[in-house]
Picture 1 (cartoon, rainbow, N blue to C red):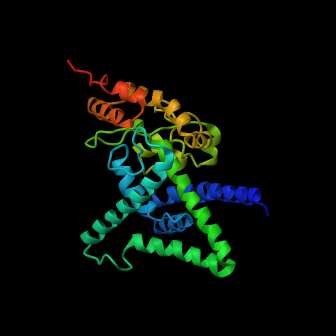
Picture 2 (spheres, one colour):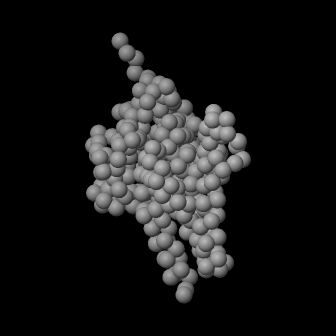
Picture 3 (cartoon, one colour):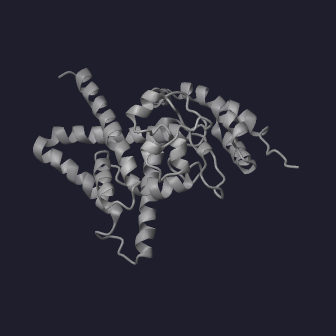
Length: 285
């Protein structure tokens, strides 16, 4: 089999992990009172070495979305390639701290079977061991490549769902604190993940009940096309910079205008930097 054929197979497998494993897992790990759903969701996440998602996403990301404390929210000016690495590392650190605090509250030992973070790593390792035992080293290497690719795909999706948005940490998450899209094919293929604004406003709502929210800030396209655009940083910033500035004008509160001004100044993008000193809170009478 040639390199082109192998690359195509790996790419398709990565998309399958992302669409058939990670997206359903995202729905299942939100069902925190259903142990069976949680278990299935975590095993699906084990395929991409990302069982920590069940900790960080549910108890960290949904609390801190659009703030500097959220690893999944990319600041203005960051490229998707940097974000994959930074968000992956900080997400793991955040998940460890969340689990550490949970065990401390319950007076349970950190290094024990009670630690969900460590159990998740063992789940991923056991899947890897399965492929190695039954398929050898080459099969294990294929699994590692596909799993890490699936994890990278998740971080790309995080990047485009939250890029450049800011929120006053003292206020609740609203629909305008994430990018949304109502493209039909993306919605059909991704269990309504596209209706992300409603999901963040009400994280407990099942995927089939999520609303399109046409007044929420919109991505540059559907999920699949937007993923491709993120991979070309100059094109991404060219398309997203006007959208970010429009978000500042249309959606930001007075405090968020201040945060946006700071984010623009630090972005390194000339158009955003130029606007940073112009963005002032609107005085209320």
